[in-house]
Image (tube, rainbow, N blue to C red; front, side, top):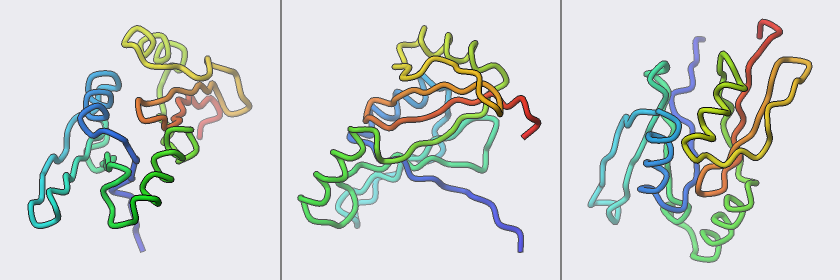
Length: 140
């Protein structure tokens, strides 16, 4: 059985803010941006890196899923605190990527550090999601 991952969800508080961050700051491209009137104007918004056309990050509002307002507020709080998960970006040069992201105004939460597998750094998106940048040196 051949299986691939096509979509990964990233919770965001504001889709327009997230869209600007992922496209303007990270250089991703818009894959889909559709509003569905039949689902209370739900906005299906996906982006992805140009080098991976089959991968889409779903930028989904924390209050978009059918849930109680209390649950939506809890989810928004978890994301804002950076505990909602994140993605790992594989890059050729972690230090150069961090320098470029800093110049674009991205909040770096951990400067590049040498690890057993390569070089690793951290950054946050405007919703609070904690993401990683890695430069593998172990061939992985």
